[in-house]
Length: 354
Ligand SMILES: Cc1cc2ncn([C@H]3O[C@H](COP(=O)(O)O)[C@@H](O)[C@H]3O)c2cc1C
Ligand SMILES: O=C(O)c1cccnc1
Image 1 (cartoon, protein in one colour):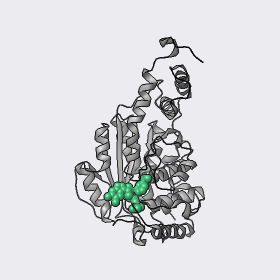
Image 2 (cartoon, protein in one colour):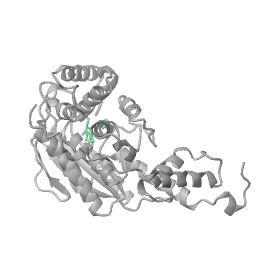
Image 3 (cartoon, rainbow, N blue to C red):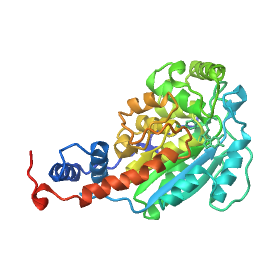
Image 4 (spheres, helix red, strand yellow):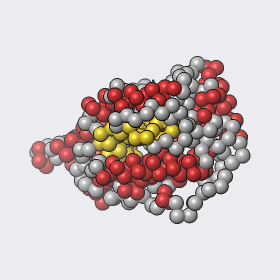
C-alpha cells in the first residue's frame, strides 16, 4: 500500500494530559460525601474521571454533541448482514427527519445532533442536518482487498477530526460518536480480531439479526480478510485501512482529535469500540479521554471492552449502534455529576464517618 505520510501524521500528536490533581481532588471529595466510600459505584468513578478530563473538581455536562458518521461497505456482497445496503441511505434520510432512535435520544437529552455522510452508496441527496462528505460510494470488499486506500483512510480520519473541531467550536463539553452502515459489524469484528489476536468465531455475532449459519459465514469472511497479506499486521492505521470502513475511520479520527483537544468522549457499542481500539492503537493515551456508555448485546463487544480495560455504565441488551447506548448513558452521567456536586459532606451534615 502506498500513499502513507506516517511521519508528521496529525494523529501522532499526543493527547492532552488528564488533570491528575483535579482527579485526586474529586476522588477525595467522593470520600467526604455522606455515603460509604465507593457505594455509588460507577457513578462515583464516572464523576472522578470527568473531573480529571474537564479540569474541574465538580464537572458537568451542559452541551453534549452527537455526530453520526454514515457509510457503506463493499463486504455486504458476501452476505454478512440481515438487511440490504440501501438501508444506510434510507436511514440517513430518517436521521434528517428526526425519526431514528438517536434523534429521539438526542432531543430528550438536549444534545446537538449532526450527521456526516462519509460514503453511502446511494446518496440521499441534500438533506437538512446532513453533511455530504462522501469519500467514495462505499468501501471495497474487505474480504478480497483493502477496504480503503491510504488516501481514503486519511480522508475519513480527517472528516472525524473536522467533526470534533466543529463540536469544540460550538462549545461542546462531551462528544458522542455514532455510526450507520449496513455491514459494519463485519468490519468492526475484523478490526477487533486484528488488534487483539482473537479468532473470528469469538468476535463475530448476529449484528442486525443473522441466524447461526449467517454468523458462521460472517466469521469465515472475517477469517479470509485476516489472511490477506498485510491485513492484520503492521502499523495500526494500515490495519484500519485494510479492514475498517469510512465511518469507523471517521469515528477513530474524531476520538483521537477529542483526546488531543481534551474533549471527553462517551463510546457507544460494538462498532464504536472497534474504532476506539483503533484510536488507542494509533494514538496511545486516547483511551484516557473515553467513558463507555453500555455493553452491547453483540457478543464480541466484551472482547473489545476488555482490550480497552473499559467498564461500561449500562447493560440493557442494546444492539443498535447510532450512538444510542452512549446517548442512553447521558442522563446517568448527569446524575453522577449532580451527586458529586450536590451531596452534603460528612462535616456539612454532621454525620459520623466510619
Ligand atoms: C433500520 C436499521 C437502523 C440501524 N441503525 C443502526 N444500525 C446498525 O446496524 C448496522 C450493522 O449491522 P450489520 O453489520 O448486521 O449490517 C449498522 O448500520 C449499525 O449502525 C441499524 C440497522 C438497521 C437495519
Ligand atoms: O453494538 C453495536 O454498535 C451494534 C450491534 C449490532 C448492530 N449494530 C450495532
